[in-house]
Image 1: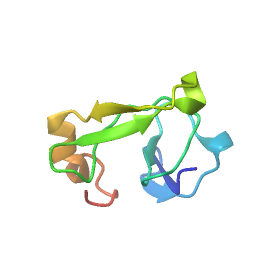
Image 2 (image 1 turned 90 degrees about the vertical axis):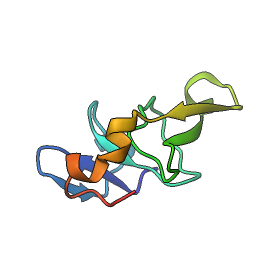
Image 3 (image 1 turned 135 degrees about the vertical axis):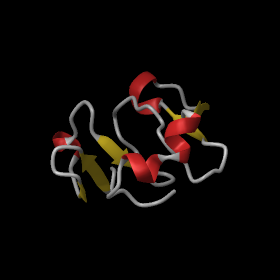
Image 4 (image 1 turned 90 degrees about the horizontal axis):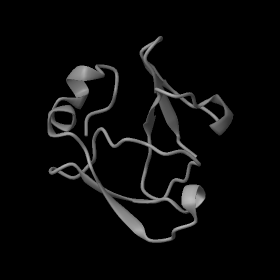
Length: 87
């Protein structure tokens, strides 16, 4: 489960349960965390914005799928979401 979800309406990171996650929430996921949701990658710790996602909770496939964040969003994440931690 995600350690924190960024809610745009109150502009702060806060701990959330799976039941509290809503469409449009921005999640801060660490390596190995699992959530039963399909997500769009906005930023990654990798400079090129790459990450790998396992979708077993959604479709039963146990292999990793490559994900790439949009370059502009990845490079400007901290500006777009000013209270978010830097990547």
